[in-house]
Length: 179
Image (cartoon, rainbow, N blue to C red; front, side):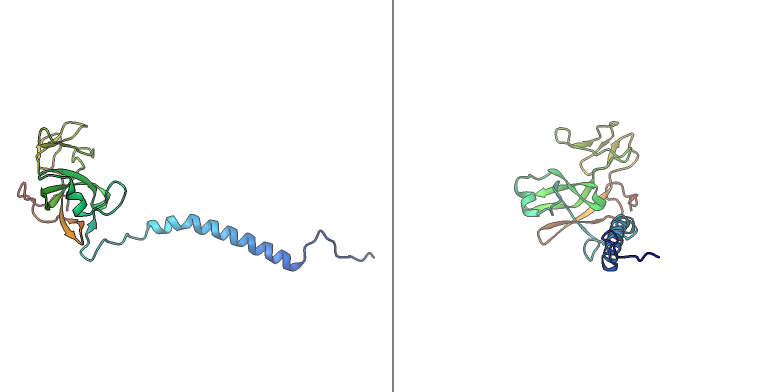
């Protein structure tokens, strides 16, 4: 009978346990990394502030400062920010020192195009199918069936805060269809 001697090709138990631990750790890390977005999808997002408002963001994702926003703007100007649910929203300049108490969602109610403000004609005109809205976002020409949604705007610590508009639409006297 031949006796078996330890060979250099067979790792000792400590090395084997280390390799098993390393393999298990790698597989576990990859699995958790792949599972994180799936689990995160089912967790509802936290609301903005205590009042449920959303701070307006500029095109780079930075909070919009009211002082800087009003610096080079005149009364009646309309400028886009990222608003509620990330939708593009027009902030309307009331005067050199203030903004209007409402913002206008820029998503056309016909097929969802972003509606630009036409300064020359003093109205919003959809480039996709020709819908037109007045200076407050009320539909004046179709095919869009409804006016543009509104959001409340307020100033908190020099930041523009948008909150959902759930009251009657002041433009039509109808209940807010988007609420």
